[in-house]
Image 1: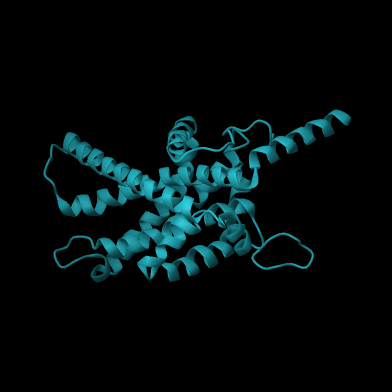
Image 2 (image 1 turned 30 degrees about the horizontal axis):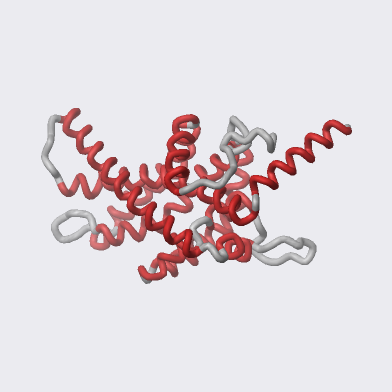
Length: 272
């Protein structure tokens, strides 16, 4: 890993710039990103199908159509764990061309206890009341990146002077609530447009391949909407990772830190 050879330039960016960069990252690393995305989402979609079948009264209304609100809650609870492989993949692609699968697997399983604590237990509590959703999406939106990529300990250790995961999450987001909230609002509109685009594209493909142009609400709200949600989530994960880099650059001068560390490493190699 070479710190002075970033595959994604670390610098401050606006919200629209982040979305534009996300499309470029997706295009350049399409195969790797698709593989990491499918590793996380295919088991999740299969598990959801089991839940929909086992509990039809919860996830299906009287007419046989999908109950959107319970499915949305399930989706919001699942997507941090489902996108964890993709986040780990993006973390490696910042400084190298290839993803070290062994390292990604070790990091994934090493992060599971914190993911269970913060992204399952705490997240489930915050999802109970819709008004507390703002904590997840506008106050602490980068918990996944901190847990998976920074690997802070869960509890304070006597021999380790570093921050715990909870304190690191709070420190990274502290004082940025207004900016993060405005970015979240703008992102919601862009993601909604992307979701609608995916739904229309799937409906168009259905019409072209099966010559069936009817607007079947059960199919569109169930199967198509599920796929569109996860495709939008995959792109949103890339944007979220880039936004995390942007926040670290704004708050901590990460661009300068990487430059100094790379120069120090180059000087050390020269002396040796």
